[in-house]
Image (cartoon, rainbow, N blue to C red):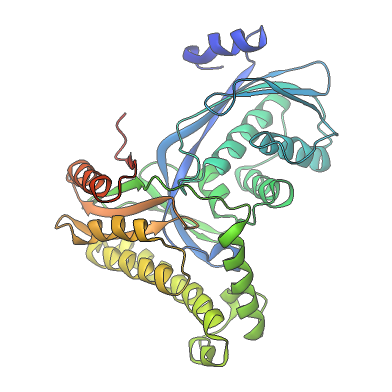
Length: 370
């Protein structure tokens, strides 16, 4: 049943109570950036912030959708007549278009969306919306979608309908993730392992105040460059480049060599990070965070001066083992590994100094104020 705190809001918007509610978390990627679309390894974990949806079945094939904080009006469309280019509504349209193809589902619904996941912070607000909506529709209409199939559908919505060329990590993390654990995911096979986060350390996640988007721009350029590099190395994706790949990078154009070096070495860093997690070696894990950021800054060139400032403040703090940019880059959030029981003090101090130096309105996401 819907949360009683929002049931009245749904009724005020649509004139009747919702039938069902569902939610899904945002995620932060501990390490393994730009590896998922090459079939590589990733290590995400969920964050406390979530997207919540409430829906009510309709007797026709229309969808009416309202999103708090993003719009001030109810948006409508007819299932089967989905049309791109309507902003946040494209995620809803993409879901009904995908389900129509996959299951024949064409029954309409009223939808209310509420989220405390910041948009453009690199913590998967879009994946959380898609997973939450698909969970609600699965329950309402009895759809045969397990959690992995649900993540696959969510990814197809983002890539095929919304036009954001993302890998599968975000959707898998939001669909499968649980608090207190990381998911070691092989994006080639979708095999995954749940690993407890170390008790000796705590995560800090700070939104830099610089938004980014995946549906175009530099993210898409980096992706294309990495696949050009893979082609020159004789493989379809860099996951399959082989053990001698780094030695062969000298034959590539310098920019493409750097792109390939990041993806190949980042895959290795994920494996090393998993080993460090299993051993409880937080110092090594922190060093891998630092090395990952250096690779993203120099080889993949997805950082910014402001992000480097925020990461640098973390890396210089005595209670931080390591810090790195997380997500697609060009803005977004930074993840840090802090000493146990020191995360809140660390996050507050670093945020305040970053704001003083840059004037940007950063926000601490983890530890959550709630």
